[in-house]
Image (cartoon, rainbow over all chains, first blue to last red):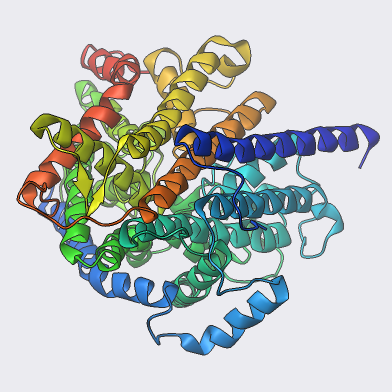
Length: 45
Length: 573
């Protein structure tokens, strides 16, 4: 892959990481909206 | 319209109805670990847990379940993205396809991991066999299993009392894949191969046609991908023409079986739900709602497509006879005709599958509107495996809440009180999809980058844009055709729509599951609203149409409705 392609790939991966970090944050937002405590006591992963 | 056409629709409906109960029982038995069927695979199941370091006896809270699901999607998307980007360096690429462009690879990765299967590419001209098998097909299995897993989490929420957990995500996905998806796909793949669908790793074939010209026939491991494409609600075809391609759908029998596969799990899960909550009538009520909405849709589409189109004003004979199918045959495969194409299109859009055996862009305006409305109703007319069930349960929560307000009682459903928090989450899930569809369509309709993809002007152009974002956000994946979507603008915005349509819905659903599981059940009393009768079915149908349908009515008025009236005045787009 060319250098330009590698940079674009990195940008795409950053985009994905940001999107999933936001989705994980959305879990916390939903939890707070319904008044539940967070984070969960058991491990997710 | 012909009686043969209606008979075809009736046979399909009867076969699906017959499969609901046995398959519903099989699903609940295997996923909940109650049945003995297929337990010979339990050694494989336990081996997977050991390999992955999963403690199958430990359950998760809704937040842990949601985070595990997000993590699994994240890994899946990254893996599929990278596989496409380096496919030129990997084996099983006899056509020597180059690496997929970054924006297209991202769109495809998100598309298949979210069970949408929107395809901005032609499979036979873009992806290697390895990308098709280890990338697309694997994600078809896993994304289907993830949807059913979320439905199980919600079912446990209704079924359990005073519980802190809603199941184990890893166990659910493993069992659904091994005991539900895999066995059906093995049988379906063998059937498709028998009917003539290719299953080979050999390169494309160069043939000499009867006219003496050379033609390259694309082939590959089609049958195995076809089976899960239909069963999982994925819909992404090996070929660009999808199920309109004779190598994906060679006979009328495969056409019927493909439609059955699309609806099989979505309908059976209603019975699974009934069994989980201990009252199968509850499941049949949900099935009845799906059936009413589906049959209304297919009747409209068949009636419109079987009627003469605007070409009749030019003196073209379009009446059905022994010599021709009649009706609007533009964009339809001549082998399947109007009735099967109308049925397939309705099945495909009512579910979240998105496979096509005819070009939806060529349907009459009001038929196209029904196909769009099927998706806009948020996957409640059968929907995808799992997503259809949790989609309709979201509407159930809204319906019992509205009914509770009308009669002045605290709403409850299957012994669980529905309170403000559940309604809050249900509305959050139900509103994010329309907001995404309408917002993104509006942006695309004014930006030059969005307008550049249109091949039709006027209201049909708006329909093309609206259909694309609806298909993406509703995780359907079918294309209206006519929109050139393989551009950076559409690849990235449609990927965003798919992301929103999947995760912004699933997380509130799991939140509701967690809240319901923690509640104690309340016994039914004289004031309890019966939720298994025709009255509730009518209430739920009304709620779906009012809440879901009217949200999009202004946008549909500007697209297909205007086009319908323009057509009556002699203007075609």
